[in-house]
Image (cartoon, rainbow, N blue to C red; front, side, top):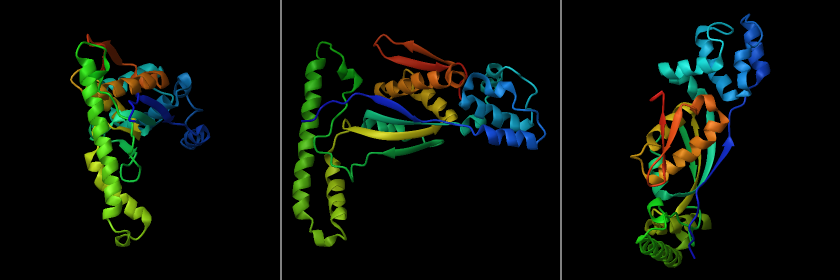
Length: 266
């Protein structure tokens, strides 16, 4: 029996700094010990941005001393390249194939690894209920029943296709049993619905994440991917508030949220 699957976003990788190597570089360049501003707040993401930005002018220990002022100045001027040195990786589950078709269109600064429908059996795969059908409102329950029946029917067709193709495709045509199994599943997956749940590992740099959240966190974005953008923003505003704190979150009458940055298109 296919069951709905909730959205979950897990931060699994984030930046770290080898401070001994930073100190060695600064000493080699005859710069005084690591300036206090670089260590401010113990946010290594911010430190990476400041180290890379100050390298351009060799301004360590000079200029803007307050790290918040320094970062906000970079954002305001649109000096986005230094934010590309900082990467965050998330494992996302409970999203639909429909969402990931949109997600992977973000290419610059992103890397993806997604659960394969060629290599993984999709029998009894869970599915994602679109936000428009998740609310308890008049008429929505019937619409949700239609969706659930359609998903169940599609996945039953998938199972039947797998059985038929396992017999129809001679194993001697393939080098290994694994190749035969892969051929069967990649043909059968053609009937799977966009609502099927998938899992994806997404890594991107701060500049790319800011662009993604600005685009997909806007009111005009699809509800499901907007929920994902806001879930990622919630985590990043805690992890590195100086790099994402300028995003303002607002609620909409339908109960969903939007995000808008003070500094756009960095």
